[in-house]
Each structure stands twice: as C-alpha cells, then as structure tokens.
Length: 111
Image: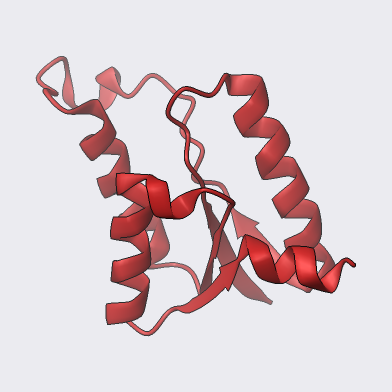
C-alpha cells in the first residue's frame, strides 16, 4: 500500500478545525488506497530537545520532512500555497520526485 502524508495550513486554526480537515482528507485518501502517515504532532515536543527551540514551526516542519521520507505521495489541503511550511514541503516533494495530490483533485473527483 502506498503511504501519503497530509500537508495543511494550521496557522490561526483551532485544533478541532485542523483535525476535521485532516479526517476529511484521510477518508478521501484511504478510499484511493493510501495509508495516511500521521504528521499531526500533538505530543509534548519539549521532551525531545528541551526548551531550546526558538522557532517552533520550523521544528515541526523538520519533523514533517523526516516523515515525508517514508511516503510515496503528499496531499496538499486547501490553502497550502499561503502557508510557508506547506510551500517548503511542496518544493521538497518536487525536488525529490514525490507524487503530489492536491485538494483540488479531491474536489474534482467527488463532483
């Protein structure tokens, strides 16, 4: 089974909004035969490296890219182009030849 991760904007969203969007994407991706790799990090990250993090979002971006190494594809949720982390993940996917699936494709195929 092919593995996929979800890239989505999270800034200014509640945890509930993020999870709902992820759940919708996960259902779609699983219906297409993908196994979704969880990159929504809820654990206490400070245990990993202490309190020395200056740029928390950069820390999580690094973790996401590490998880990307396990994936055949990456799904980009609506609004990805406005989020720094999503843009970096997309460029990484392009440079490393990882299949890209967009939210627009999901919407087109469900019409």
